[in-house]
Length: 121
Image 1: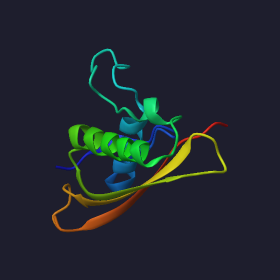
Image 2: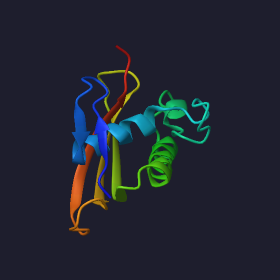
Image 3: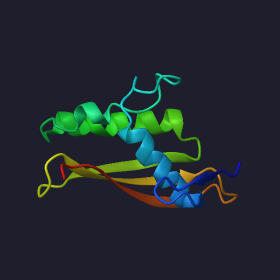
């Protein structure tokens, strides 16, 4: 299934990997319960951003990421995930994922996806 979306910054058409990345960022940065028509949309990441970067919380971040994307982004299947905390910016971390794209004919094609989340400006 091919999705055609809109770039939220420019309003121009957006598709393919760029649309998937925008969708993933939207899912992960939207707190669960904040959308009136879709109360279950989003992830638990906004609640976890300011927690300490210990092993238990890193596992919570990974689990929240995988669960949210498995529920709301049907175009990818996550194979592995890595989260790195940016020590130079408070509350910022980078999510690195290896994912199989389901929206392309070569269903065994693994993509590397990197998303920067959070951070105080």
